[in-house]
Image 1 (cartoon, rainbow, N blue to C red):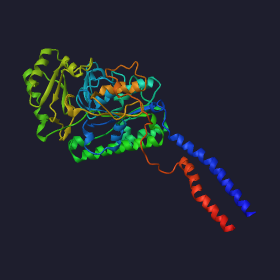
Image 2: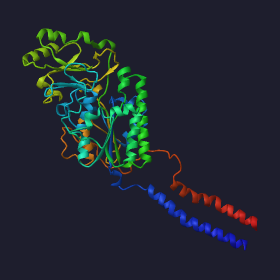
Image 3: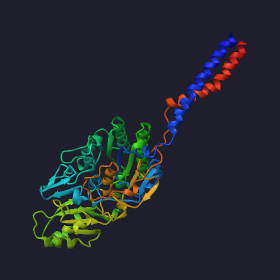
Image 4: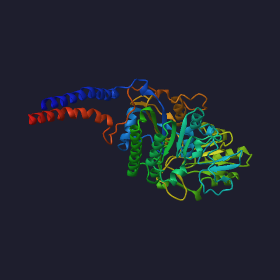
Length: 479
């Protein structure tokens, strides 16, 4: 009777093992099979991270495993050329509109509008009679890619884009999800990690989001204050890489990464400034020109360049004469007058500059403090060149491409989403980055705890290993 009982138990065990194990194991193995080519190249969303002041040669300064993984999985451009002048506000507008300042209308951190007779600035403490203390950067004259995407039924998000009006509000339209610069500061997440976390958290809750533009503080503050070779730069680069790692891990765990193209870009680079290369404001190199010509400009002042507007001045020859006094001056790289600003894409129809003056890299105007690093110089200086990395479905793998232009980013992103048509941009679609993947875009992460499927496969094996000997021992003991 006892033998019969144990035979029944043993048969039941084998029945469960024979039926249950192959099904679960085959199910598990089936999921490990390579996806079809079409599946591994499906793009559901694109996330663009602009990392402020990430210079084109910073990849080699320290170990950046997450960024290096993206490069291996995708493409890296040799460099990315910013618009003139190479400052934050201008180039975040260029990046998101696919146009230079002569089209998008933001010519500097401060600029003058002839039609409004106002100077607009992102600096709130402005006190001069022409200055409007509102940022004025909402006065775009070119459509941002993020608005074009919204108009084409793509759900979009902007996180900390400098400043929210500068690239995400256009003709009364804005992205579905907006977390502006002030919001990020108030909530203490205006950090590289904070921005990355905000992006992935919102996407996890709203996976329908198809296009994201987000700005990380990057290395801008550190390089301004400590120069480009400081050990602090290595630290902040590693901080950026950690933020990218967390983003990739969370997207992977949520099964969202495989249909996401990740883009890393930067608005400009950075050049070192020597202590003896400052122009002090009280020794302005404009004083002699003013004395000689008898005319005085309104100056939209910046550290590496100045935009001069002769408001009310109708004598064009006087303006030319003023410029002649500046040309060849110590520390001045270039001077452009009126229509000559077209050569550097700064001759906007309503905000055209009378004279633009660019300092040599390494020189800087002193705002009452000292800098170790500065940007804003002409974009033909290689230290001003930024980065462009893209990886994900539909992107070539482990490929280097030639240098490109910051205005190429917007039309390329829209083309990947198949909505480029109708977008007004002078940028070029980067077709040389597009290609097919043979496997899912998947970031390697360690599971925090065993998955149900893992248990489903392992359990029958454990039963086979330990269950049969146990039953046999019990049987012998009973007999």
